[in-house]
Image 1 (cartoon, rainbow, N blue to C red):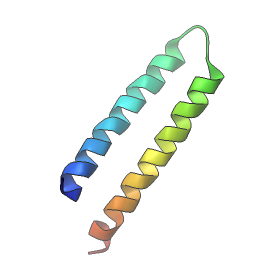
Image 2: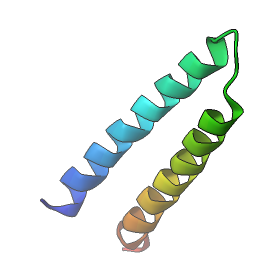
Image 3: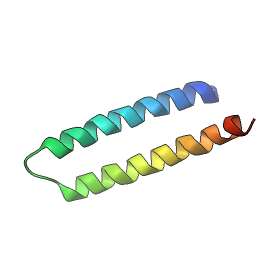
Length: 59
C-alpha cells in the first residue's frame, strides 16, 4: 500500500471517529471513559496523519 492510499484510508477512519463522537454526544447518558478513549484515539490518529503528510508538504 502506498502512502497516498494509506493516508486516504486513515482519513476515512478519522471521519468514522467524528461520526462516533457526534453519536456519543447525543446520548442521554455520557460514558466519560469511552469519550476519553475516543478523543485520545482521535488525537493520536490525526497527529499520525499529519506526521505522514509532513514530507509531502515540505517537498
